[in-house]
Image 1 (spheres, one colour):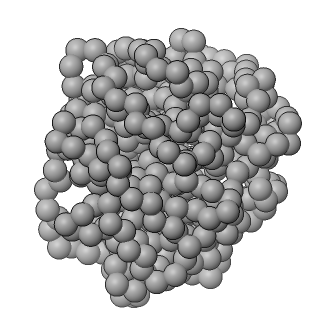
Image 2 (cartoon, helix red, strand yellow):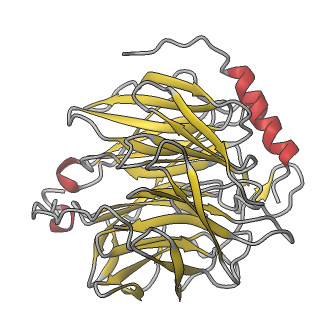
Length: 416
């Protein structure tokens, strides 16, 4: 697994580099890139199913779990992706990384009846459809497609634009986008990669100097990608912004390093006005930050910066549609942290009453937050923790063990 000493050395170096204070500032020609303007059905408040990747090197699969009316989980299905999983390399021990095998958030994504997932060991992307009468029944559409790069770790899905975009972080690092058709599958919109000059290997050596996450903004007019720096190697992290005019990705992105950040990791879009995008992002060196991006993209502004006490690797984030607050997990501290993204106020930090060493990817739906804990190599079992965040205090309601799923498990997505 990635050694705690190495993780902390990278994050400690980043903390020293970004020591404050910091100012706070209150597809037209191609039919496959044409935005879908048909109205969407209103989302249900509670989850119907959640999904994660086994990320097994011998054969990757999607685990689909049923969600009951009270938000608790039960067995569902396991569906092969047609590709292989993989693990990055521990920067200190050179052993396969775990429990954060991909150094990323959003290894799979759901929107409507479509699901897309990365196969890091095959350099491919898989698309599936979700059956309307059984959300745990998945059907592959077409075949897995080449991601045009190496070691894909994060994927974004736009139902509005029928678009899937994937971030690679290996020796060929960068972004590639695909037309996402529920009948035909994935078709590349370009044969060239929007490259990130990371100077990485395949598999990548991390966690520093790797891609963290790619996601669309609220109106799906921009693709945002967070990339971690590595102060121990004098590399600077950045935020990539790729415009999606008329539903078709631009040929070039814009990159900037938000002030006061160094190790941007998992993030979530804060709902807000259409003329700007607000991003809540974790930074493993201190906690989390709220960043404003004007339209069209220009220099980002830091709206709030939240140090998290006792944190070691605050790397994953989700915003609850019920509470309008952000929740953050840490791979090395078994707490769930609630933050007001508008003000940066830390509302509560609760150590959960289970034996997990920490948690990684998470999603929110209804009253619940669902968080994945892959466990550790040879110790503990992978599980999903279900937490009720709708009351005054965070309250754990279930720890659902994932039989047969190992410590390389990654990603978490939700169908509502």
